[in-house]
Amino acid sequence: MQILWLDTVDSTNKYALAHLDTLADCAVIAAEEQTAGRGRLNRNWVSPRGENIYCSIVLKEQKSNPLLTVLAALAAAQTVRRRGLAARIKWPNDVLVNEKKICGVLAESNAKGLVIGIGVNINMSAGNLAALDRPATSLQAETGQIHDREKFLRELLENFFAFYEQARREGFAKLAEIWQNELDLTGKRVKIQTVQQEFYGTVIQIDKEGALLVATAQGVEKVLAGDVHVV
Image 1 (cartoon, rainbow, N blue to C red):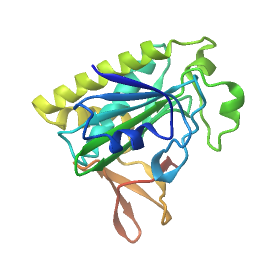
Image 2 (image 1 turned 120 degrees about the horizontal axis):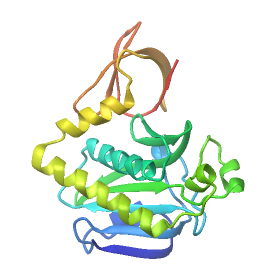
Image 3 (image 1 turned 180 degrees about the horizontal axis):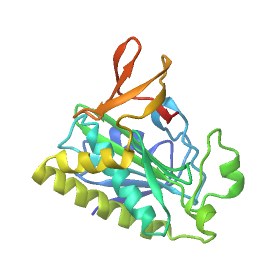
C-alpha cells in the first residue's frame, strides 16, 4: 500500500486530483494538516496539525460511483468500533459517536479517476471541537486516551480495501444492504435539508445509486445530497 505523507497541504483531495497522472491506482495521500480542508455541501473541514487523520484514496479505475463512499463509511465505522465505541452511520456517509460527528467522507472525480477523502477526528482537543459549528467528537474525547493515528489509518485502509475488493468481486448489493440496515431509515419520518430547500417526508427506500426516495405531500423526492434528521 503506497502512502504519500505530506506535512502541509491545502486539501488532500485537491492534491490527489491534481496528481492523478503520476499517482498509482489505490495510492493514499495523507497529511499532518490541511489549510483548506473540504467536506460535503461545500463545508470547511477543520484540520488542525497533528491531531487527526486527513487522507485521500486514489481509484483510477473508477469514476463517479456514489456507493464507493459507502465503503469508506463502513470501514471507518468498523475501525472506530474496534476502539470500543458505538459508531453509527448517518446518511449518506457520516460516522457518528454519541450523535456527534467523528468522521466524514467526500468523493471527487475527474476524467482520470476518483478520489475519496476521509477525515477522522482522532486526538482533536476539546477546544478545537468546541470551536466547530456542528456537534463533533474525537476518539480522545470519547475514551480519554491518546490514540496512534498512523495505526488507525493503516487499519482503516485495510478495512476499506477489503470492502473494495469484495465489491469488485461480488458487486455492491451485499455491502449496500449492510449500509441500508445501518442507516435504518426506511419508513421513518425525516426532515431533509439540501442546499436548495428544506422539507419533510417519509423515506420509502434507498435506491441503487444511494439516493433517498422520500414521499412528500407533493410527490416522491429523490435526494442525492443533504442532511437528514429523523423527526
